[in-house]
Length: 345
Image (tube, rainbow, N blue to C red; front, top):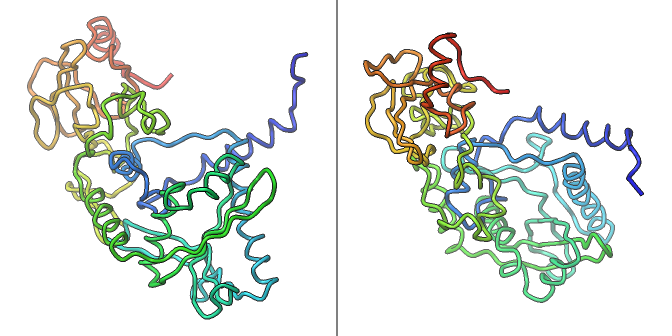
């Protein structure tokens, strides 16, 4: 039997998607992602190369996880623990930052009075899990079963000057709780800081974790098509060759222009266009050769007018192109005759 239309459910999911689309991308490298195994993925995320898209059902599932944090805090308070879930100075989540604000973490809370260690303040980290991952966690512990969560706690402990964390995970299938106390490792914390510094300061994307797009880490990466395929990166100040991280979680434009969503002087960081070979350039243009077709083109800023008889594209126009069409004679003839530009369909 065919599934019946569900306009109410569809409308609920659509509302989640609309709210999510209105949210600004994260302005920093987060503790919750620093344990990811691929440096390139973290760099692409920090540079706003693209935005991972989720449907309304998944977004609602994420909200369910956030709501479980409040429930666990209530449970801990009910057994006599003290939980500090808000920074009294701001009334908001506890937040810490490092590396000029480009590395940041938020705490679910700090808890004291736990039966296992009544006097020791613990970082509180709450997660939810499906049945399979929950059993794996019981068998292996967080460091092995969930290294991303382990790294998150180590970074947050170091930044918040705490020596212990408590990791509580709810099984979404059975409502069982997994509980583990985690000890701070200064060696791990410093290694994570060094890794974050290297990624934040890199002018070009680091090497891929694998040259094989079917490698399991790559296969589930939100940047797979941009990193291994021919999907164009987004036009934003952070994908521009003129931008670099500055103090106070801000970014600096080498042209002295305001940092917004990407201006007419935007030129892509050349290594983001990995399907093309950069041949020449100056601060207002970069000349490329498409590896698959051999055609040459120029990514040009609004103020740049290179004296060469080659197709040239502003970044916004280039972002709307398909790689095989770049420099294609019929496309270029149409652009020349009509004075047109390539736009998003």
